[in-house]
Length: 556
Image (cartoon, rainbow, N blue to C red; front, side, top):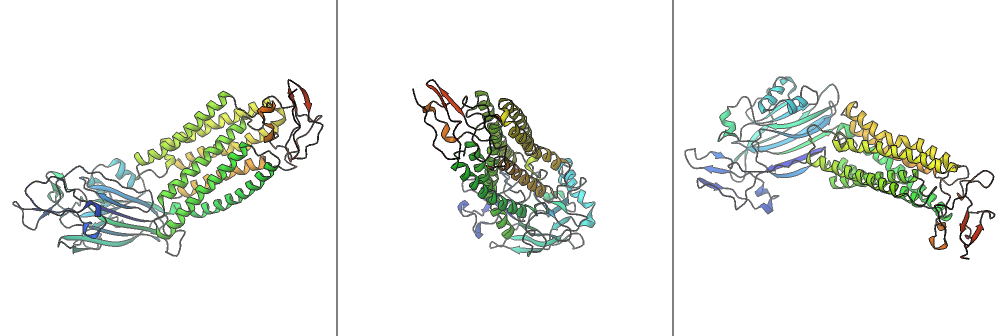
């Protein structure tokens, strides 16, 4: 992973400045990417201070945005905050091969800034972030482990033995002095570890007066670039990725290939069913879900391939792919629920209660997913939260999936009671699809509480792909139109749903017994007796060969 974050402070032309400010370096806000504008606002104090003393702008209300989720980030910020401790990013490094390349630049008049490196044990980062509240305490925590070189002093006057950040003093075009630091760190640990990077300006060796201005902390200003990698550049599947992401690209590529094969199978089965006029909406929903999931995987693979090459990727494509896959998963769940109620198998219309319950549940699933995305943007603490499933909406989605399973099992039982001839199908459907409903909620608990966080992301990704693929395989297996499939669910032709001819699919099913006829699964049509006010017209004496003309129903 590479990460480049640039923090800059600019001035708007209409800001009010006191009359004692002699010089203001102004910059056109439109040209923020130009070199002559990528410098901080610097003011010259002309009262009792020496003529060569520079001080930062008077404190004003500012907003800070940090976009970082183990992705490459290029962020330009107007940043000036009184905080003296700032979280930067996290990365899971492999021991001996994990490397951090950094570049920092800040004005010379600022107090010494420090790059702090915490690892994931309870006595380090969790304690520093959650329990300790002051910058001094957080730095002291690492001072007690000085042999690990976890403090990098961004100061050219600090000796190498203490933790010099390889810094020099440079001048910009305005002859202003800056401290510029660049270096590389290799991580050695007992195992692969998460490392958390923070920036602080509370050097215990400096006096408090250097860090204070008007009884307030001067805060932190820095322009910096971070490049975090594992292994060698030739290891394209590992180099830019955090340890917990190594298997994501290979697994997504593998399941993308499998689902492309599924699409071909679905096309052949759909053509066979369409020829026999058995291509119902249930099968269409499954086909659309498979296609949508494959498209989502294509977006994810595209993002990770680009990410593996440049460490940047396409975050928008990544988010779009995840959203498409979520919609495909919801559509497949909806298909399972309506099929459990017998749609296109024992009935062609759902009851009002069924429709109401399914609409509410589907609506709740969509709202929960959108809430999880909003929660991630608004409330996720990137310093502590590793996955979306750790949030409240993530647990809500798991709970509603189990709720859907309860309705699914009850619906299968009711449909089996209503149509004993389809009991084998509904029993198999309920038993085989139960793991599809239960696996994600169970694995959320396992991943969040029992799985090591340095392998969590890749294992969760593999399990999610396996569960999704398993659901598709189960449905295609049960609905395959073959001679040896005695559980073939569909027996009503799409051309037999015709209101104008008086055909009522809710009541027109004849009891399918061994003495009357059989459902061979290949043709999938149970012979029916259709009645209307004009008399009885039997079709059971004709032999169904798959494509025949339906007997006309007279109006007399």
